[in-house]
Length: 100
Image 1 (tube, helix red, strand yellow):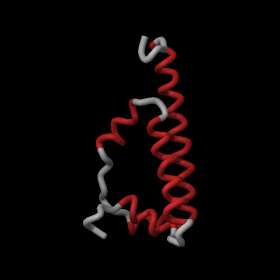
Image 2 (cartoon, rainbow, N blue to C red):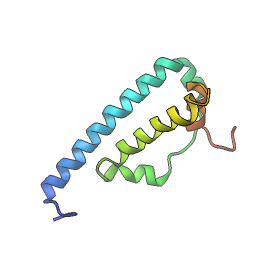
Image 3 (cartoon, rainbow, N blue to C red):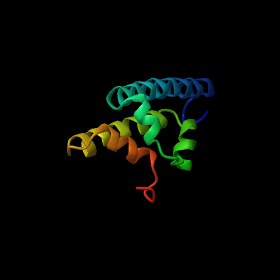
Image 4 (cartoon, helix red, strand yellow):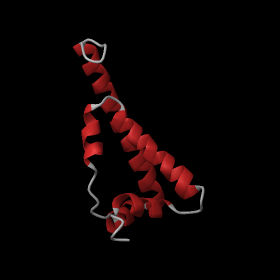
């Protein structure tokens, strides 16, 4: 047993969490590309590396999906509600603080 679940149930939760992550990530990417434009996204993308915690969260069920939903919340609360654009959010999320 892992975390009170049988192994096959735990793996099923992991797989379902990964599928949800990909669905939310694809939807969020499509939303951003619709509002920014694919060419502009490619031109303004930085080379920021993901933290180790984000990379390891792939192995925890639903963690990666929650990180994607957290990014959506940051976009809405701290950028759009304060009058910033989608492009400014994209630059913030893909560039290191030293590059700005």
